[in-house]
Image 1 (cartoon, rainbow, N blue to C red):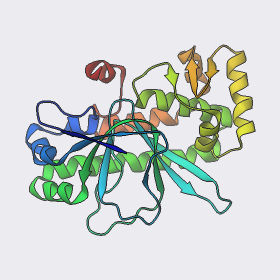
Image 2: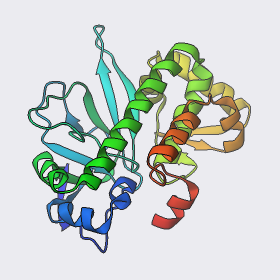
Image 3: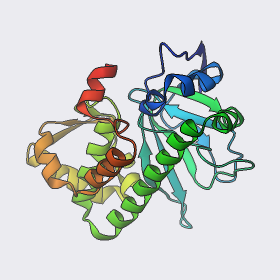
Length: 255
């Protein structure tokens, strides 16, 4: 990552919905310690076993992903995290080794906060601590839903779901910077399976593939092909942390 010499402040918060969910007083506790940086796709944030010392907040269209290594050498992505959340040391205290690999999926701005500074702020404010605990619950819901989705839904349904999820967590644009290889990793299948599904979607006029990206032509049709897992996660976010999961309204507010 490339560090930018800039800090957040209470009047101009980073474009991260979780940070913007904090009250003015709670944000003031961490604002002096936030630093913005630029990240490139595939930048590594953590490897399994690394000390988790920094919380990373994706901003705007930036995305991070959790990858679990398997015995055959493949990494399988479990969840995506965009501006609705953060990765690394959100609720735990003390020594915290990373369990998964965490990488930057879509490049852009990230806000960094040292875990010790976050812990100190949570010790001063129960409301700040509560927001991050609620977010951890939402992240756990994503993991549960992803596990169920992988077990019962078709590759076509999961492909549509991942594309929609990526669109929602970035800026809502119709162009998603995902390759066939990246989609295969998200799905945990071989590239040939993903390519066949993409060819079907192209033939139906739902999307087009470009070099390093996907152009969605018919979002409604794509939504009908997707399972309801993403909707379940959004509903849980809405109940636990209303306003944090990206919506068309929140895209307009930060655009």
